[in-house]
Image (cartoon, rainbow, N blue to C red; front, side, top):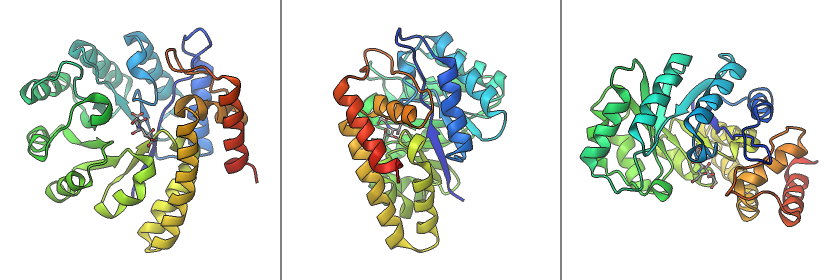
Length: 290
Ligand code: NGF
């Protein structure tokens, strides 16, 4: 069975501090309404690279407490500061997270040897498993098949969260590593990744659109390809509308329409202006109100 994970958002107050209650409400919505298989905590959607170490730890703790073992959790601990990544990894594992994930170190154009050393350092002394977070468009780090092969030599590295539109590399990875986990991360291209044998998907838009994405995966796996395409088409109308309206703040505005106090994004991400608010209301009315 393929799995669907929502990439957890972080709720912020207007003053850019973390809103614990709002974050808990989004977690609850994902469990109770979306019925996701799991949450990816501390990724891009969580606005985590703009948070302090203590804030990132707080979010892991909130998610761990609020889910109370009901769904899988993956803690994204990657950082350009390997000592912060190590600290976050230990914190998450000590809390009880079974799986961590890490974006490669970014900004300095590190060599592959340095990237490999970073993953070894994060995992050193920890009894855990890790999923590489590959997102070249944002991290600036593209890993080749050969480089994945070298990273996957470490048995603690169990797979990849693949937010990349290189479908040739995805196919080569699947063929070379049938036993590694591959979660796809471009929600609007899910339909193209399903035939390549992904184990599931992790994404921001599943915070609102999980049921349709799960139905698409089920339709595809039962051979109803036409229905799977139809569902992806509706999803893409929705996702492209969201992106046009400013993705993360708009997801939060729609959460608010649904009665979930999702709050704000952190500066320098935008706070809602009247045009964005009315755009989000229109998206809500189009896709959520029958
Ligand atoms: O937000 C991004 C930036 N990608 C997410 C997802 O891959 C990131 C994707 O769902 C994620 O899961 C995380 O780390 O939190 C997109 O938002 C979606 O496909 C719309 O383009 O690339």
